[in-house]
Image (cartoon, rainbow, N blue to C red; front, side, top):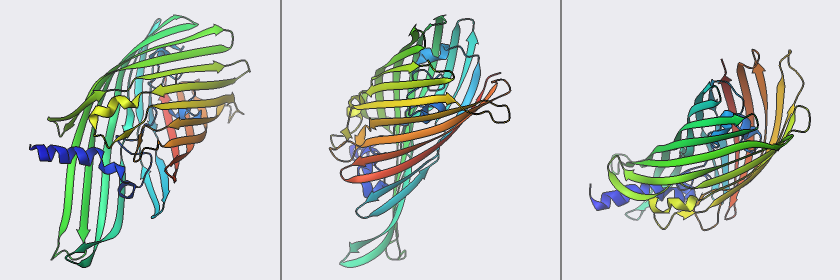
Length: 377
């Protein structure tokens, strides 16, 4: 493959998303949208419970919080619209962002999970005109990206005692982006059409450490750190385009459970996205990001004898990628319910996040619906 071809593929994979007209989204700039690796329950609480939630592959020590073996899966479609000066762009992304299994033996729990780390799936299609030979020529343009970077984790937790658990996680981050740029002209006999397709692959590694504990009655605390290893991006499956590191992440949470059947949870999380700088070009705007979130979970009325958990939450964070020097700010409100069946052997979680993202005078509205199903035999 020629150097010219390598550069073209890299540009298509990284830089074409910097055009809002092409992609019609604030949230999927750069290498994609960070879903947060949150389960439906955690999403319903604004992400605040992420450090305690065994279904969210964030803190490996959370696997040791008194739960038997199980499996879970999640579906979370997102509906978004961007209001820009040249119109309103809408998009829908269907995501299956998370599934996992756990197995417990005495004081040890092992878990395997696969989740969306950065999602870069979008499609935009619009009519346009070009000046060809001094003549305005109608055409139809399509820009499309599918894929992203995933996080496959193998984790082990040790419940030292009922009030203290520690954990270790090994992460592999594979990924792929397929980018398509196409233009069809109305006069197909004289002009024809144009298509440029490229594929970029990613591979990274990381290690995570975590702890959960109850220092005083009714107060639980948890924290985790992910230490990023090397990450590479290649044109296709072979040619090395860039190298960086998986972003280091640090998070802490506290939960107060002094009210019967209720919990108040807060979380602080920071991620060093600038570690990805070597994967793209100088034109890619990277921002180290901080997330603040809070949520309340409380027991609701029973439905046909089934217990119901009610959840509300809020979050504020910075997104890691932007098309200009201004970072994209995201704020959101969330809510959801949880139902348990067959004495807790089956659990159904339903939630929604209503987010607003702003940058450079543009506003994007997004609604993420989420449904999670867990089986605990």
